[in-house]
Length: 60
Image (tube, rainbow, N blue to C red):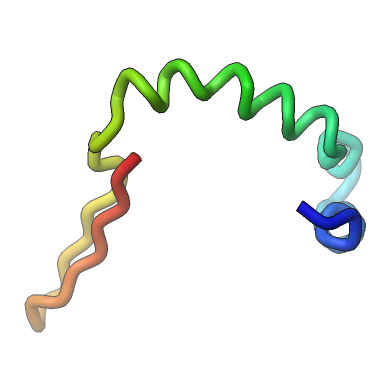
């Protein structure tokens, strides 16, 4: 991710949480989650249906 993205996220996030928006922290969180993501590949984490039949589904 470009540095500019981190700068924009930092500016838009309130204190004290903006200190967590660093490349190192995000990388560490992703590294910790990768095993879980691999083990649960295809798991549906969001499923929303509207009255008109449209839906949104987000899977790992």
